[in-house]
Length: 173
Image 1 (cartoon, rainbow, N blue to C red):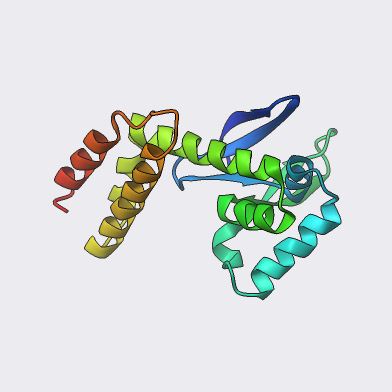
Image 2: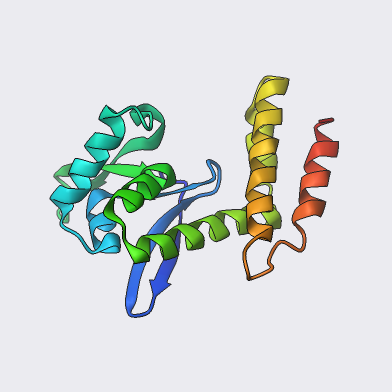
């Protein structure tokens, strides 16, 4: 999972480096990072994540990824789990954290900016999909993202409709 761009989330005095995954239109955090973000103990985050999966709210295979890093001496390899925005949002609702609301808005805005700016990521994702239905589903997802952004106060959706029309025309949808 080396395809991340690190983006800094800032809320008042709080800062957190967040892994932005442009290709998959999501962000990723560890349990420790979620605990820090929501201002709760890690065991509480673990319990909520387990409930999210046990209740069938989300699929673990598509929302959780294992990553590894080497220890300081380069000998020991450490595995850790990352959770995508869907899990972060679900846990945030369960924790009922005000910072979680701010984070959700921020993360969605970051992902929408990637989509609007283009940078070829939307095209790369769509081209990798095989069926018409998959491509249409992805573009409809982008449409929902852009529509959600137009409802926000910051007004950064100026190029959104143009970007969406370009994608639909390009893929004959």
